[in-house]
Length: 350
Ligand code: UD1
Image (tube, rainbow, N blue to C red; front, top):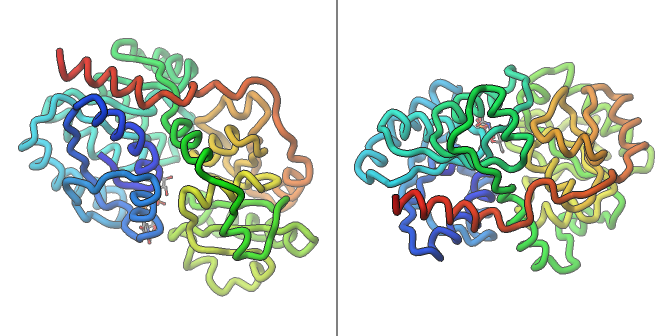
């Protein structure tokens, strides 16, 4: 089951690995993300096959959105009676899929299990905890995730498989070439700061949002190029903001456009989960505007720095951003999808 942008990325290599083993996959899209730039462009670029079911749930409050997904998923899963249900990550689509499968007593596997930021004010953290506790099979990106699960009493069905996003990144980087279309369209070459901000904690808190905008504006008006692909959640806030005149605000980037943007950036300022890892893998220093992260290894290895939503702290972090140190293979070797598909095949045969 997929529904939001990061899940299309995660499902692409797994779907391919399942099919190459002769496993029938029924792909369900909840419709949580529906703009072409948030959904169709990822299916096209990553060659993810068309969903078998599209539930067209769309946006809404957490209860409304998750409830509607559950209501529409139940008959689909009930009729299909799969040997296993796969959910990815930590969005409301993940939670809805997990709850429906668990209540129908369909074996449930969670890809990206065991992550914890320990910040329960984040909807994703609540989703992670709930999904892990109803999952039968927990596919963890790292040994830290296994320890997090053990600390909550979850020991069985746990496997360290690595991170599927690394599989995709390796595959697509090899096809990337030299081009960087978004930077070119923005008349910027390299050494710019790449920005993505979409967490409600940053966009919906006027004080935090003002500080972030002030930091980006300070950077952009003092000689640092800043490129910001704007998530629809922040679109209305950003439109027409005079403080952002010097910042290159652009529509959401495709997956490959994002990789090229990352590759040529001097550093990234973000509150995204996926981008923290993609920056780590591409060797781009990352500044995360959040009090905590679930990707703790990126911080421990010096590639990622957590900063407050504070103008001066962000400007200072950008000025002092440096590459980290040590081994960047902490989230697997790029063959995670094959490992997951082998585990699923074993389940289906059991
Ligand atoms: C969701 C996930 C988040 C993930 C992010 C990736 C949850 C709780 N959050 O956050 O973990 O990092 O996806 O992008 O599941 N909108 C559009 N068009 C779209 C999609 C959304 O305009 O195609 C707008 C709507 O105004 C919507 C808002 O964005 O209300 C937020 O969308 P939603 O899916 O609720 O959450 P995200 O912020 O995208």
